Image (cartoon, rainbow, N blue to C red; front, side, top):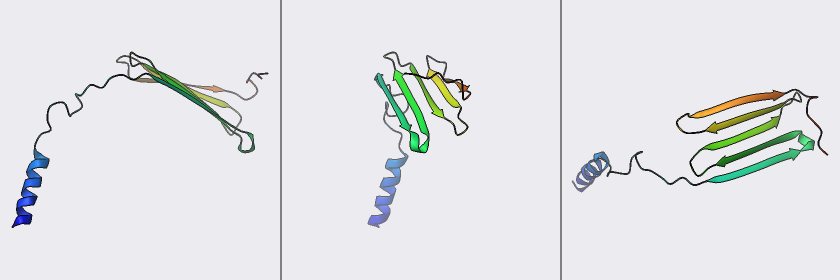
Length: 102
């Protein structure tokens, strides 16, 4: 009988609506950040990088690049601004067109 009463109490608690402010209508402060990393591992031919920044207004900008097995470099650039949602573009730099840096 005690088990049945506990189960009924648990069901009542779990089925009750959540208090106001605990749903997705909760607003959180915008916390600006930035990060970046780079991998350069010649023995495995693993070359890649990524960078991203979030501005105080909530806009996010970033990109990542990697060296593909065929020698081409693929770069994805993206942003999330205002009500535009996630926007991206993909660029492919053919091998042989990469400028050497000194």
